[in-house]
Amino acid sequence: MTAELRQVRDAAEGLALEAALFSGTGPGVLVWSPQSRGIVYPAALIRKHGLESSTAFEGWPITMRPTGGGPVPQGPGMLNLALAYTVENGATIEETYADLTEILRDALSGLKLDLECKDIPASFCDGSWNLGVNGKKLVGTAQRWKPLPGGGCRVLAHALIFVEGNVQSDAEMIADLHRHLGLPPVDPKKHVTLRALKGAEMPDRAEIAHQLYHASWRRLRTRRPALAAA
Image (cartoon, rainbow, N blue to C red):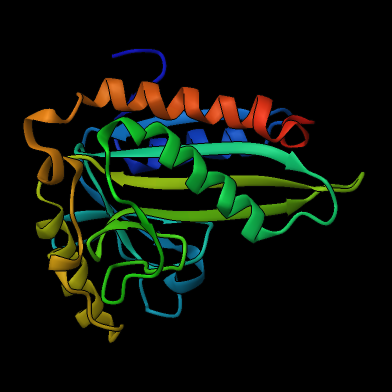
């Protein structure tokens, strides 16, 4: 495993690394993948749905995250990209989402995918800044912002990339959770992996992590210099 890809035990360890990045001052990039499967659930919905005392659903450990959205699966076939940096007053969520999606397009450009940036109804944790192919979700995105005492904000931007494995089976588990909680339905067929799209042409995870890591630093250091300011 390269230094560019952090292999962690579980989602809780990965989210702890992201929290440390977010609490820093300068720009930072983290690419991580968990060794075990689990569910990551937004803190804002934990009590609302009566999960505050739950540690698992159908055998999948539940880990709380501070960002919004809906529950998502984590597992060995997924890569997580996290960027932490400071923006000046006046920066917008749309601008930072645009930066994140451009990083992802840059990193995945060698795979010649026709990536669409839009909502994908019936996908889990749907949002208008998903990246998909042919109406199926390949990447989910999220953000967390924190105002700074001296002005500006600290931003944590996150992307979850479905690389390989059976993401439709994972989505079926999230669909079961949605049914259990009375949330909108999830269609497992609305999700796809890089492996399913590219087959043997897909690079290994370490190479994809390498591209994500360096595309992130190119964006932070050269295309938007103000983002790198501490």
